[in-house]
Amino acid sequence: MTQSAFANEPAIRLGFFFGIFAIMALWEVVTPRRPRVVSRWIRWPSNLGVVALNTALLRILVPTAAMGLALVAEERGWGLLNHLGLPGWLAAGLAVVVLDFAVYLQHVMFHAVPALWRLHRMHHADLDFDMTTGARFHPIEILLSMAIKLVVVSALGPPALAVLIFEVLLNGTSMFNHGNVRILPGVDRVLRWIVVTPDMHRVHHSIIGRETNSNFGFNLSWWDRLLGTYRAQPADGHQGMTIGIAQFRDPRELRLDRMLVQPFRGSAGDAPIGGREGGG
Image (cartoon, rainbow, N blue to C red; front, side, top):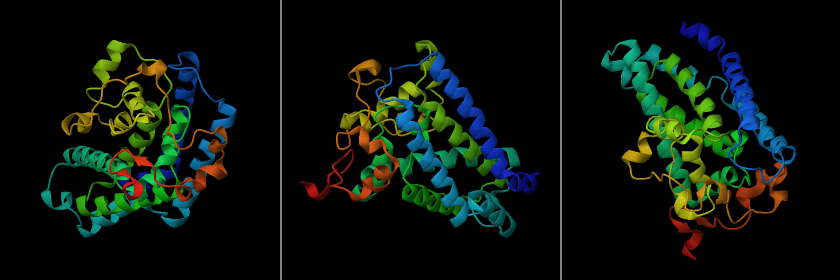
């Protein structure tokens, strides 16, 4: 089963991506949460272009990726879970939770370290907030994220199938929690006790620093609540809040070529954690 899933991993991930993309696109059209500031025709070609670039880079540079490493770890007995003798279902569930926590910590780190914030701020420089924002990451950040994930997989020794489940979940929930979709307030309040909802994560994309420095979770909402980084609502409300960062407000910055060079332009600015580069 695992070997079969590994052989079909690209098709499985691609199928889920396009399926969730179609559902979220329709949902955003039917019940949008906020009016758009910039047309999809301006933003989407660049946001989806960087997705294609990142996918190609990972396939070329890390063809077997995290699931392949998990199979090797399982065969050679690497990692904690391969020595605990847990039932398969328990090991898989625990692995998904631990991997999600690792992504939360990584996200905090990319906000805390000025050099890493330079890379990550491309994600925050989008002037609107919709499902394509959830896949808008600089290629260097994507490669660093994969390196971190490989280290975690080596140390943890998760079942390979759990890694595939986690990857599909992370991709799907990233599109969901960046969705420009309206969810009934009562439903949102219940959902965000377990998962990160669009209204919860939108706060993280506020131009206000103390709000950007909150709600770091991508999948499970527990980490923000447990570690004190949870913020329920934006100060200006979801309709009144400004999306993005102060540094890149010109719509021309939404072009793919300008997105790719953003990390190398200007100072790190007011990174949400750690202050301005150089302390100035």
